[in-house]
Image 1 (cartoon, chains in turn cyan, purple):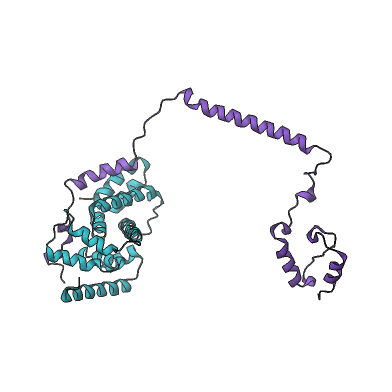
Image 2 (cartoon, chains in turn cyan, green):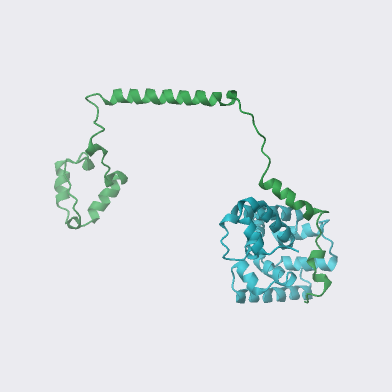
Length: 183
Length: 137
């Protein structure tokens, strides 16, 4: 049973207990943040790097955390920014290439020994890959993580109405692609 | 598209290496606070730095003494002159920029007074001065 965020924050504020508090925080959130990032970047190695970066940023800035948002929201926000920035960086590295990021990620998925999906599941992942990064993030958070729109709104800084519209369009696009087999 | 269908369970599609999460925290801690090797103190380590500091001190002393001798000459410009040290707005503009400003600005709106022997005009002749006086104020 994991401690509450308030208990973790209380420990983090005490210098002598900061390491213990951080350890509890990592144990509580490492898997959730890992899967959030992994669904966006696909590669385990990249996910590992980004997850470490996320927690390092948390460690370095925990004293500046004012508690305006919940600890959960703050962690998710850092992790999503890490993932989106990583994808932007990858995309800019491919500017002079004939391939786009979606093609690279799809190819990576097919050859990844740590991906155990069958043909249908692989094709679904490729459909989701065609969505813009932020829309893909919204889709993952809503559909696979079953997050509430209010939680997503706090994390992404977008209104719940915009998130609902984004998710609705994402679903329609994926359904159309699967129906027409355009992937 | 329903959440109950196993096809949508992404966590089961992506795998992680064995014991990844068990080892993650330790790897993270090593990254946050890496062990730094301790270097035993030795005078030999700081000796070159002391030498550089001494050389810099000597150079500074020589410079201060030498420049005082040069400046104390009677024919040299008096650096302590308040007029000389005063920085005017003219120092920040080129001659052409100042000319453009003067030709387009109503002199009545400013307190600018120009003298033919001012440094700003350089080699202005009497004929040039006459022409300037014809400019409509």
